[in-house]
Image 1 (tube, rainbow, N blue to C red):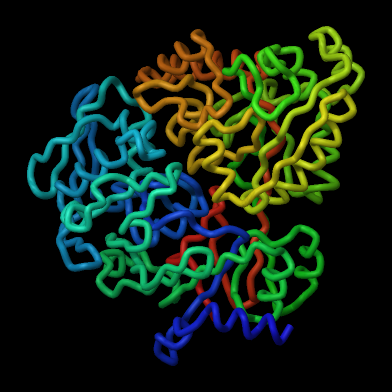
Image 2 (spheres, helix red, strand yellow):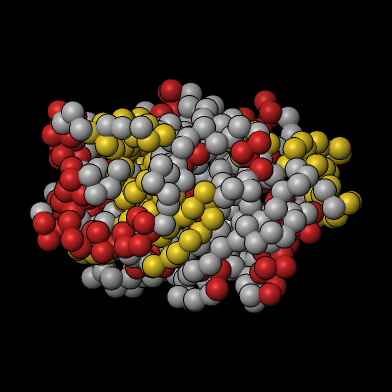
Length: 531
């Protein structure tokens, strides 16, 4: 333990000594590091969450995930395809430059670039026009019923700063590109970036000039916080128990009972709006990393259904997840919030006999071999889930090689489509299946509008695309809801993905720490206090 204490103290370094004696410093950890400080480089919660303390959006959300004004004071739909945003006056970036309409238009255009994973979110926002320094008008390509949600996902950067530092385009993580924006930051948010050491620590300090201070948005008392990625479960647990860190976003499930009994610690649990599932390659004529040559078994619905019915999600829930999961039938972060009735949220039954019969009917009675790409530091017990599923699929003859890897390697494999079988988790801030991009990036075929960016399995169904396009342009909420349900039914009937569960997310902290537990599993420091 002493050696661990010395190592972690060195990691924390001088950041512990840069605040005044009565200031509150906060140290938190998770198993993986944020991927970049460029807010348009990665659309992933563990990256977006720290970045949101530096870079704000036009529209934010409260603790109940309802939209609230952030950098925009108000917004209005003045015509079916025209939206006007009134910007907050007096806001300054961390370098002192004033925030204006130019920054909004630049940021949306930057996110619309095909390099950014926000392309599918940003392009439907349309083309921006500066009316005056604090007024922006956007003309959308068509009627956009989820405009508020889409705008609320785009971080605002300073145009002059980006031009000066030659980062007019988002960092290309898939190409392993490095850029100034990947290690430096200049936003309008409640905290400034002090230092960034990838895979070691990232330090943030309270912004004394934040507009939110006057608006009483700073509910907490944290003056400085340090994020420390600690991949090993034992290391994170030991750090929390010893007081070296104050908070763990993903405490090991096997240690929860011990933590709950410890009066020095606190455990808070809540259901996350995030579905965990598998994507299957349905685009290639021959699978990658498989012994099947000249054909692709995943193109056969019978094989996909056999895999679905061979996975015992209840066993995963009880044994791997220790009860902290809810079985899923839909690939939506929050089906109930999306208006999907309970009858459509029922899984096909676990049935090994039926699964074996389907495999035989498809011509794979003796099965086949395939590789499963799986992260080992992204989702709760991700690698353990993959190992359990591999064992289950072996019972119907599918020999799965579990290829577990860190997020930094796993994510580009999916982005570059260097996979035929891969785990993914998908979450969002609202229940709307389009606004926080469940359907359009996951179910829609890839196109030049930015749809299908995360359709790593290459699903392509013209009828499904037509339903998705129609709902995205339907202003009538009743008609739109029916289109959504039709799309859900078509998608689920064809078993284009293999759903597993919605993960429940426990947070663990020292007893003197209090934070609002959010359904998107993001930690927002202005809502936290340290006693």
